[in-house]
Length: 180
Image 1 (tube, rainbow, N blue to C red):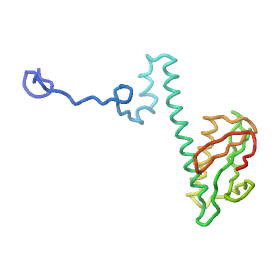
Image 2: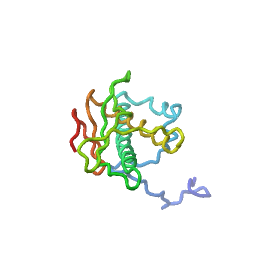
Image 3: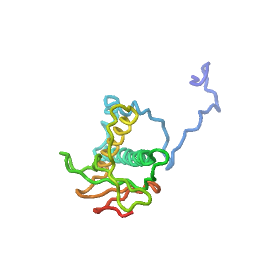
């Protein structure tokens, strides 16, 4: 029987295309995110996995999500720090902690300081009421979500300070005010 064409013979020399390989020699496959995020479709695939294998996969996925969170937060902070044309250049953005949450300490999304080029002291950010600006409302919501996700990924100690260098992208955590 010929699986590749008509007739009842096998065509000798008929081959399939090459299988793609990912780094490390693992066969690559495109996995549909819609499939992987559908609980009812994924759970049957995981029944034969050990608890250790499930945790290993979870560590990989969470680690990738955490690294993307930091990058997205940095891009958003750079956008926020850019400000209006002609405004002073923001070099760093600084956060303090808040312990007002039942599940731990987070970076405070309402107590934020900017370090402005040429100024000695950080300046508190005066948050505007963006109710009438849908773009600003969306950006503020994204900022709060990303900062909370970053707090969950790398939980701060109570009283810590996070200083984000907008030029280098460095996230520096310390227990004191930054003198930049």
